[in-house]
Image (cartoon, rainbow, N blue to C red; front, side):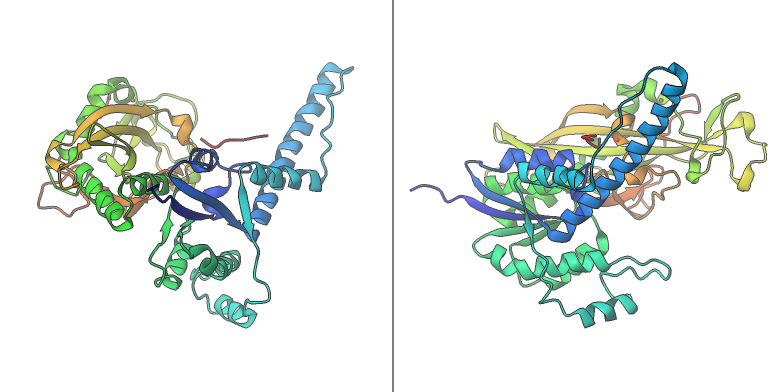
Length: 424
């Protein structure tokens, strides 16, 4: 008897989708799974997301066009006899580029249910700042999110029939609102990122059970990193120490980002003598399932190191705005690891091991919002689109809170060193 294929309907929201006009990881996800032998999968965006993508793309085009024209003018003034060709694109031509990109990637549109939306309720939510509107006093955010939510909820009964439905959304308020309205749909899931969903999808193709997927993913999380659990790989393998041993130059000659600390231009030029003024902090991503091989599961986890430094040479200098002359040292590492599978299908935590450690160059991290200077490292950390996990500071004893790690000796010594696709 031929095995029945899994069915998935995937709805993508702007925070996950947009990348001039489509994020590379979204296009790769679609290419990897559409037309596959084991799964029938379709991808959708609410109509307002398509319109929003057109507007973003138009804004990006106009900004780049203005820069091009300014440079062209300077070039003409320099060369005198050479005119740089002008770019002539109408608004509709720009919009068609976006529409063609969606069509090429087989992304379908979910129509906005204008006649079904109770607009009186929308107005009430906006006035009283009810979810998914932002509760912040001076922040007007939520109208587009509510239209997205109304669109998803209107189409969900049809998409849910004999299928799993996934909503990809990295907006916390919208995600929480959607979850609160879809509790009766057992096979409806919200994922914050493409890697999170792709990991779950690969596991589902192996286990054919959403419950087993969730259990295995949780086991993998605990296997790699569980706060203060010395049996988890992070502690057992002393990963912070291994980062330093594997890439001594990165820590021995740190490249400090100092000219935009807390978003303010604070220092340029002069002597440098950077010394650490904080303990190192680490963000650990949710594990991403890669494949099964020889009765072992292979995973990837990302870890981001961050530490605040101060330039001793200009420490006493009074800076505008009262900001200290500080900067931060940020590195990302990708850790490949594996977990054997017991006869009962459970992960063998005790025999999990590290396969490989790679440093991710800084330029591939530049577009991640979490790397804005001054970003707090406390609370939950969304790591490069790979989910939410605790942030901890590896400097405390085991009696400390779960946000810390018992590695007081791993701080780098004072002398110790982001990828959006653009089609324009």
